[in-house]
Amino acid sequence: MSFVPFSTPQPGRDKTWGLLHSRQAAQLQVPNKPVVFYDAPPDAATLAQIESVHVWAPHGDPLTEMPALIARMPSLVELSMGPGAIDPSVMTGLRADMLPDSLRHLSLHPSQNTYTWKGGAMPRLESLTVGATLRFEPEDFPALMSLSAVPDRRGVMLDRALQLPLKELNLWNVPFDASVFNRLAALPLVALGVVNGRTLESLAGIEQLAGLRSLLVKNQGILHTIRPIAALSNLEKLNIQYCKRIADIDVLGELSALQELTLVGCGDVGLGTLEETLRARLRRPNIAATQ
Image (cartoon, rainbow, N blue to C red):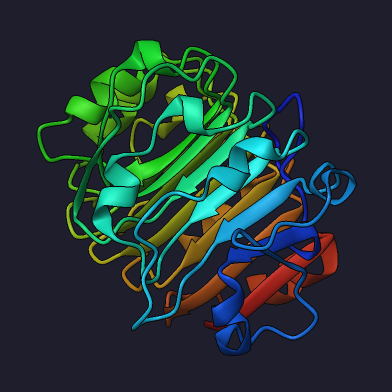
């Protein structure tokens, strides 16, 4: 469930079609996955039914050109590309005019560590995921509500993100300390993720993000203080994974709005009898490898 008010929600995985060349069909080892071949396209009626597409190519037979068929999918809401055998030039050469106007969600996982969007304005795009350090101009994405990417150490991407109408932000390989929450305070975020990093010792300042309903904290190697989340009175969903130095886990008992909790791989953080209380109270508790 997403807390972001997209005009068109992301389709479920069961509605995602694989887009590939017909010669590659035998190598796509995903049972019952619907596929469409860009070298042997189906009729217009079938293309009109496709809402979500994942572009795929096997190793040894890389994709070297963006399939023009994508632009002929009038109902396409979501497009994902990579990871996989996709030539870097396909990603870097991607342009807005190659994509249908219906597209709202774009996910790119390039092989290179840095990705610069040079494809022009996408005024209707609402969510963007890039599995690399992202460089972009805010005016290209005026309707963007959800951004997931790797931030640069200087914080240039963050500064540009502040110019967007974001409701959700997911930062991967976080190079910042708790001052990052001061920078994000101006955004009306309902969902935040901070994944991977060794600089975040405390969540101090996160209380400024009073509208947060969902929080993901994962693989933060030196994080020890999470008590500031007690001030997040709207927090319904909390996901903490592989944070083994947390010293104030008892704060979980103070989250009155919490309904869903994932607490996995945190080791001995002093959870004790609070686990039983949480399991009894919460609608969806998932507690494992944590005590």
